Structures are given as C-alpha cells and as structure tokens.
Length: 321
Image (cartoon, rainbow, N blue to C red; front, side, top):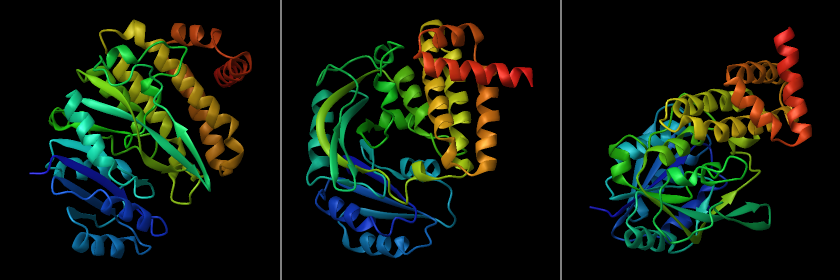
C-alpha cells in the first residue's frame, strides 16, 4: 500500500502537463501513487495522461467522460486514494524533485491531521515565495485556534488545497471532499471546515510546489459566471460558521473575509462580460443583506474607509431598489 496518494486533476492543460508530469517523475517512489484525473479534456491532455499512466511509476489514470469541474475531479481522487496520506496538485502546476518525499517525512514526524506548506508563485519568469500566514512552524497546533484574529490574514485565508498533505482519517470523516456544485472558490468552505473540525495541524517551510498564475487554463482568468460561485461558496462557509459552537467569535472573521472578496470582485467587474457584471452586483448586494447585520456593521466599521464606503453604498442602493 502506498504511504502517499497525490491527486492531480487535469482539464485542458496540454501546454503545461509536460512540466507537471516531469515533476511527478522526479518524485516517483515505491510508496507514492499519482492519481491522474482527466476531467473530460478535449485538447490532447487525455493522451498525455494515458501515456503517463503507462510510463510513470505509481501513476493511475482516472477519467471523467465529461467535464465536471475541479471539485469533482479532486473528489474522484480522494475516493480512489489508497495512501495513508493524501496531497493535491493542480494539472498546470509542478512539484520540485523529491518534494513529496520530504513532505511525507515531515508529516510522519509531526503526526498531525494535516500539514500546510509555503509555495512558489510563478508569473511568467518571475518567482515569488508565498508563506503560510501563520508564525509558528514545525509544531503541532489546534486548527481552530489558527482561524483568528479577524483583522489579520490567517491560515483560513491560505486556502490552496495543494499546499500541504492530509491524513486519510480526514477523508474517512468526509473533511477532504469539495462541494461539486462550486466551479470556483471551492477551497474556501473546504479550508474553513478543516480548521473548524480537524483535531491538529502544523505548518512547515517546505517550498516544493510551483503554482502558475495568469495561465489560460486557470479559472482565475475566467470572465464568465463561473467567477460568481464565490457567492454560494461563502454562503456555505457562513452557514457552517453560524452553526459552530464558537459562532460569536468566528463570524466576524468569516463576514470580514466575505466582504473583502465581494469588494475584490466589484473592483474587477470591468473584466467580466456585462451580463455577468450585472449579476455580480445584484448577487453581492443580496449577500450583504443575508449576512448577520450586526456583525456586518462591526466589520464595515473596522475596514479601510474606501472599501467600507463602497459596500455600504451597495447595500443602501439595492435595499432602496
């Protein structure tokens, strides 16, 4: 049985998959399996993955006849994984040679439910180190205690599923599954659920995943209504927090994060199709009205004045309409 299962969802990543597969080959070991999930690709990605399934040690090809989205592709991998530990890698990113061996060694040494790592962001020829926003390293900690404070970036704001490794007991509890209806922002309720419900976690400074930004295959570049899935994603996140025993303490952080993401999308609305931009404005206003208003008012009062003013105007205008 493998010690580690690496789940690699792929959809139309033909230009980038060779780098991904070379990185996996440089991590091949007898105790690591690579679950290559072809999510209904139409650009030749499927042929590359089929070849890798024959030639790459530890590779297993899983296929969706039609595109179902990254959440479903990851879930397919989770369901098929045999390893004691599970990790994710997006099909247009790549791992450093030997990264998964080092990651597995750190996870086994610390023995926690999940381990988070730093990563390298790749934008064209530029490389930038991105750190987990948590100060203590190589110490087993409570995931719940790493959610706060509300006014500062914390571990729940570092939602990258591929930046770490997860013990299979989390999969057995259903905590590694993603909401398949979400085409984007699927990692936001996922990371909050992990931090609220897992028992232990740690952060280590491993730099082994190279994350591509600004590529054609990235959903962050989409200009259609897939981008609006952040609204149901954060609604799911808020519903989970509202039902939590520590809701009073956690809701300010969740509401503040929701507002920040709304403002980010509103200030970027010019890059969307006009109909999508209109649905964004209406959906964001409705989301503001759904939030607990006392918590929202407190969050707006603590925000940057420009951001708070934009959100207040949106709330007033839509309520009046």
